[in-house]
Amino acid sequence: MRFTFRPMAIDDYEAAFALWEKTPGMVLNQSDSQEAVRKFLGRNPGLSFVCFDGETLIGSVLCGHDGKRGFLYHAAVDEDYRGSGIGRELITRCLDGLKEEEIIRCYLFVLEDNELGSLYWERSGWTKRDGILLFSKDT
Image 1: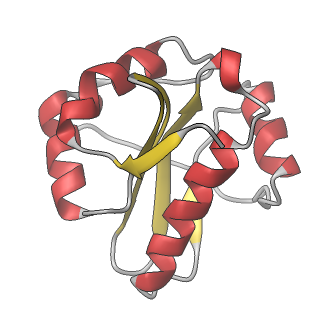
Image 2: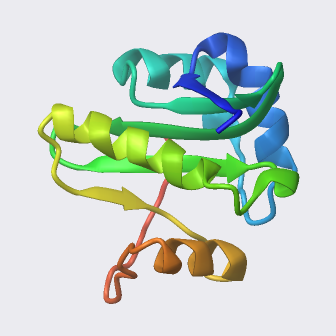
């Protein structure tokens, strides 16, 4: 592969955020601010990854855990690079990191109307869960 993968650093934030903004189905809010991502990376060192083609960020994923379960957020690959294995490699690195932390299950959230995202995760061997309702509340 001609691509470079490495753990995400806060210096990657602006490029990652730009990728997230142009990714269909990606929902961003105040919890995706640079400061919030800085805290997330600090709480979960070495678990989030980015991919570059030269100097251009073309893929990213945020990964963390609560001590019991792992979570993936904002997995994205630039449209021009999809189908080249970048997403699979980013996720493999996250899951390997979680395994090292002795986290055996990982979850991710996909919006119900995000057909492209749902199809990708199902084809990648993830199990769609039924019977779970997700509630949220801002603090």
